[in-house]
Amino acid sequence: MCCVVFSSARARSVCLITVGGGLYCPSRENDTVTDERSGHAMWTTVATVMGTAIALLTFFGVRGCGSPPEHPRPSPDYPPVSASVTRTGEAASSSPSPSPSPSPSPPVQSQEKYLVELEPLPGGYPPYTGSADLGGRTFAQTVSFSVDKSSLPSSYAEYNLGGRWRLFDATIGVRDDSPSGGRITFQALVDGRSVMKRELGVGESEKVKINVSGALRLMLKVSFTAGEHYDNYSYGSWGDARLSQQSEPL
Image (cartoon, rainbow, N blue to C red; front, side):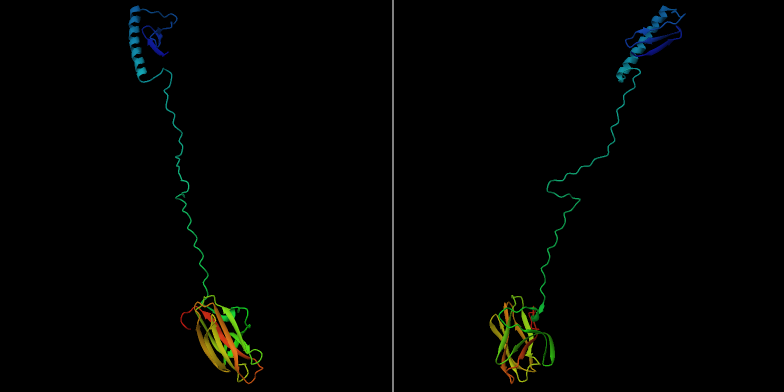
């Protein structure tokens, strides 16, 4: 029912018009309709107005009087959501893959080594190592062998080079504390081949350099040659004997 109030000053009454076009006018005490024609004309006018009003209400989607228009509910204000997709086996762009660690460098071999730092191979005679005086000069890294005419006419020691060295050098001589007049022969062998042979007496010394490139073995040998005191040891020394990586003679 659409409720429209129509007041007629002339009739002094309040009428209710229904949606179907009916007119309902409740009577008041002591009120009467004075003119039937006037009421009929009024009814015609009101019906026309109401029909127009109903048509307008229907056109604009008004469902009925007293029902407030519906307003669309606002959608919840959610924060924007971002999504990232990472394929299997692929690393995310924000986290770069770590660089591979560099492989450790192989140890660098020393450019030189004194013979006193190497252990002689079994089978020879262990030499004396340490300081020795040759012709009045002191050599701190010396390899010395003792010999005499009767009990130990020769002595030697062999070393493993492993093919890692290029040059062997030393100062050879008869140690200053050997008996006077004694003479000793010095010999060097590389892989069994004699490459150097010298004879020296007390107070004499000589610098020697031997190419040992690619060699596996180095043998140092001393032999008693002559002397007045046959039963006393003489000492043949290799002063500051060393191996090096240098290709040129020192």
